[in-house]
Image (cartoon, rainbow, N blue to C red; front, side, top):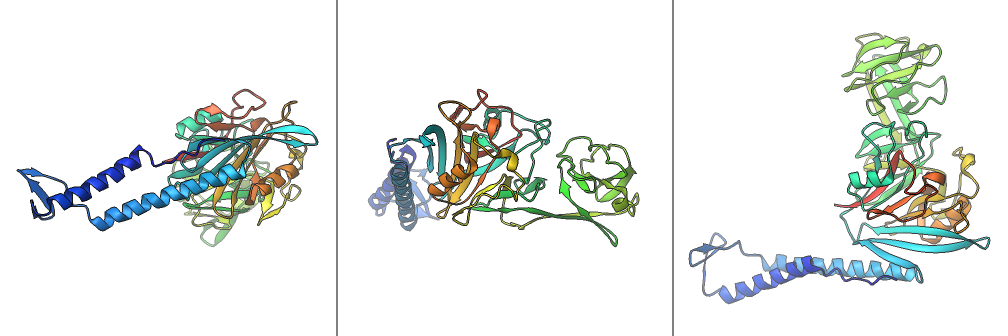
Length: 414
């Protein structure tokens, strides 16, 4: 167990001392000095404005409340993870190491639990390996670039290129659309949401309305109309058989072709069956309308995963509905979820070795439920499973340091 440090730290102690000194100086000086426009003048020296005694009292009360909240969080963690190794990462963030046994064999687990109520400066957000989607990088490189103190591997991705497979939104910018409407987690300023996400996107041109089946994703059907933005890269992918590419810049069609096209910096390229795009003409004005369902207007970031592990407080593994049968069995795992009182949990389970055999999705679901998650989901796992904590890889991934990844889910304090 780690020591519960009182965060009545030097910074807070200095604030308290400053407030006490100000009150004392005001009491001692109230009959001796002249105040003009709330400025104290002593022998020609101008001091800062008077601090309102009520504001000082509020500051002290705030410090007291924050201290109490953090102490309660520490007590909660130490009770919940009794007999485990618990480490303080930052205010409101704990790292727990433990071993559980399944079928009489060990599984090595790393757990992060964070409370944004204890520390409102905590930021939980996905990050990409680079400015464009088809790149990969180590989790250490991504975490350091984002000044993050914790990170785990994120959404599934196409191994050949690194393109994330599923919904990815960062700072309200949608980079990629959903695949098979899989479950995703949304991050608001002060909380979390989880649901299966659909895309509601269309291009309008006069009376014509064309459904857009996905954004910045590999083609999964010859009949799909896909939209590729500059986030995809410099060039659009190949045109499907009997297809067309419609290039849009600043809301106007500038080119219609059967060839791969440069993607305009202020536009996009529609790639789909000619029969769906045949009514569009060069110089036509078009409007791209993109929404997610649910709309989640207050969500800043979204990361996709699958399957569900816990839904509305119940174990729920919809591996077949989300077309994820290929990831069954016993493997290294990564999962995220949140509790009813707004605490965020992320887990990695090592596997494929004698000292840690990995977990099934059902075992992972029951573990997330036991840790108090009301909603939880699986992230990419297997060889991708890796956890970074304050400059070090905390788990033991199959490849030392972890393989190159498309994206990561990070925790920072800002």
